[in-house]
Amino acid sequence: MERQIFGDVDRYINGLFGTGGDVFEALLAHNTASGVPAWHISAGQGKLLQVFAHMCNARRILEIGTQGGYSTLWLAGALPSDGKVVTLEIDPHFAAVAQQNMERTGMAEKVEIRIGKALDTLEQLFNEGAAPFDMIFIDANKPPYAEYLQLSLKISRPGTIIVADNVIREGKVLDPHHTDEAVKGVQRFNKLLSRTATVTATIIQSIGEKDHDGMAIAVVNSI
Image (cartoon, rainbow, N blue to C red; front, top):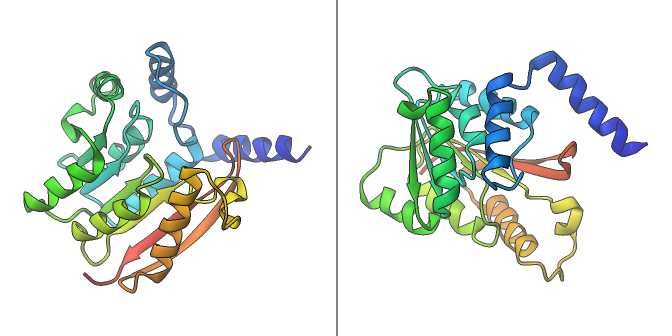
């Protein structure tokens, strides 16, 4: 009964505020046909990312974890015509599928996909002197989440919004002795975020079609 009502509420919200329409359905169908796992965020979470992007007047967005480009498309859709999403993906096949999706949806000019280990690519962006990002979305391999945060802060500015997905793990983060590397990774991230004096942050737990999880949300106050 509980799971049913959670799904029903998600569908109610989507009915009011939309799921992105046929273009997102076609993207997911292409991902499935191309062997990309369904690890993507929900439509409601995608719309939430768009709200955050508009709140900070984002022109430059960094995404850590592209997969097939579902969340990338939500983020790109919030940008002005000269905006850019730089998205990082370690898997060349996922990156190729995401590139196809961006071309199919007319978003290729707004999206730059960088292939490689995110920790290395983040360092490259910093060393290149990349302009600070207005918004950063973290949704990738969980064990290095804390390191993603540390590097993300180096390419942020006061006012940058940082969002990290999957930081509750169905409540498994409550177990200090949990052995799963993903759980331990987000535990480290959550603790680091709570102790980072240069941000104001919290975690919102979510229960819905993506089961029980949560998003960390932070705004950078100073560098």
